[in-house]
Image (cartoon, rainbow, N blue to C red; front, side):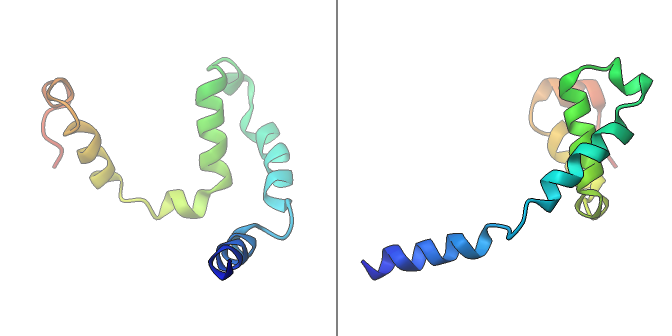
Length: 85
């Protein structure tokens, strides 16, 4: 039973105290949703919004490694994109 309470405590420590991040996403959506972005569809708009809300994490990504992982995932991608340097 103590294992259950330990896991419950860990979960409570992970849950944010407020929903400020979620509340900030609505004004961010208005900024990101310009005329051009409104024409690209819901899925790309959501992706752009996630990148906007988490700029610090997006800036720390290694783009070269991410591109290499994407290209190496299949032979057709390797043929289409070639080798990423």
